[in-house]
Image (cartoon, rainbow, N blue to C red):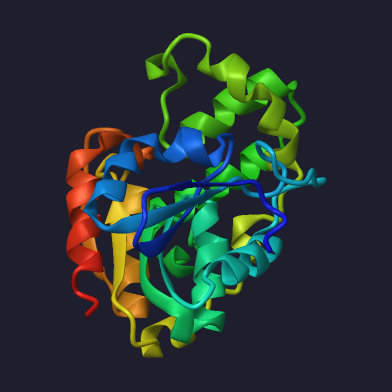
Length: 247
């Protein structure tokens, strides 16, 4: 049984939803809850350090991979956003027989864009943020801007709500340290989807390059920047189309 705090919606084929940084699972994926009415059981964990899951010093995609691999059970689809996509890729490559499909929403797969100017600039911007010695609130604003989220567009009070998670992110295992399992994912038999939010040349380049490396379909779902899941119906339909490819 998983140590994580897990919320489930619906009944049917399992789908594990892996959230990104600065937000809990239910907060991240609330716009996907209607998919539970389509014959799927949505399994929505809080990653370690978030919500009701065990506390940790910092985010760690290696630890996330262990947790996601366990949550796959006898077989499940996987949907992951941002930092959560790193652990999801590692878990799917480790347990391809239990992965029904893999959908990745703008994962920070920074190592695939070393030679793309926009991608390289994004990686350097994010590195600079992590190196910056700033108070947490200032650091949070810089971090959000670096990944393509304008803090001025967020609802009132959001920055204050996510502030407690800032130390967890600052102490994380860094995305550029992830040895992406591209070869294993390319050879895996399950369908794969990479989704760009259409707001950043750098993330577009990451998504295109990653999709090519792992033999995935790549689509754009715009309207919510990096927080693609908040678009709701357009993403939900793309996920349904992916899941229905699996007999």
